[in-house]
Amino acid sequence: MNIAMINGSPKPVNSNSGILLKMLEPLIRTGNELTYYNPNKRPLTPAQYSELCRMDVLVIAFPLYVDAIPSHLFRLLATLEEYLKSEQEQEQEEQDIYVYAMINNGFYEGSQNHIALDILKHWCTRTGVHFGQALGQGAGEMLGSLEKVPPGKGPLKNLGKAMHSMAANIQSRSADDSMLFSPNFPRFAWKFAATHSFWNATAKKNGLKRKDILRRL
Amino acid sequence: MRMIVHDLQEQEFAGWAEGGQGELTVISDNGTIRQCMGCFGCWTRTPGACVIRDGYNNLGELFSKSDELIIISKCMYGSYSPFVLNVLNRSISYVLPYFVTKNGETHHRNRYDHQFELSVHFYGDDITEAEKDTARSLVAANSLNLYSAGNHVYFHDSLHSIKEAIQ
Image (cartoon, rainbow over all chains, first blue to last red; front, top):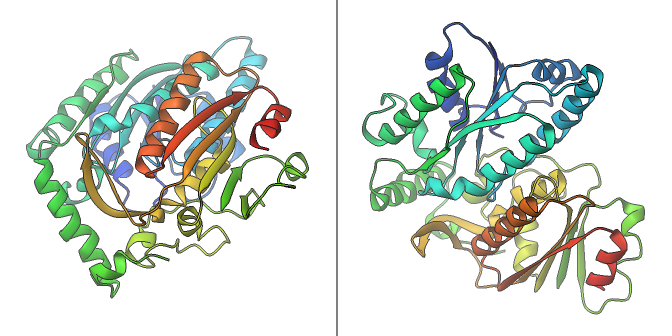
């Protein structure tokens, strides 16, 4: 099978979506040809859009942005709809493409990804492709600090289980219920770490104090 | 101040904002907006303002000065259009990076002691009921995360209908 691995993060480097794609890769690599796309650096070319129309599977990884899909990825999807419909007119039939998504959100609860998931499902319906399955990981910003933790262990227990399920569905190109979940890590500890080890620590590196973060313009 | 964010062509929107009372700020697509880079600079480098200096870097501050935020957007798959999404992606400095728990869910803390009314006018001639449901959920979620005083969602099948509604 030809599988497109689309990194929908706006971050140029070190994205959590990239981490999720790399976690998934070994589970679906055998017997398949994987092609990576990074539309965050520059828009896809017409040739790349045409390639996507001929894929068997699209795996789209992206962060939740303002309860929805990041604007640059959304623009890609709107353009891809036009390419897919153009190809359908030429071929006189719908493409047999399955779409899978891996969403991560900054809030603790993965359940907050449900609106972006519904938007993606509507895109599939409009575009005439099959929606396969999605997983939604809460506290996605933790992923960068957990790269040495194997999926399925510790805070990534839910993620590993969901990813194995999705990999099996990708291999058989089948649809299944989506899975939205929080990390296997207490919310109070996540909140404490996010505040002190991430936001305050990052601001400090930039020469700012907590009162600077709170400023009003 | 009223603030309108829209994705209409310049000639489509021309004249709409005339005759209203009070200050009005209009955010439209002049072709120069850049996408959010996910750098969190608006929270940890230049708090309250986006680091991308393209003329769309003060959206959070503008929100804080608005009594009413009116969004006019094509409804696409139950979502806003790419431009309106881009504007919202670039406006997260309106809230703080810190988290609070409300009704058992995590959200960002508010930066300003301020609330605006959020009104969203979606347009499109073939919006499905399922897409309308999703769009309503999206606006409600945005309203919660932006601490808006309330939210109103309207669907239109013509631009004339939107013009009548906002004037």
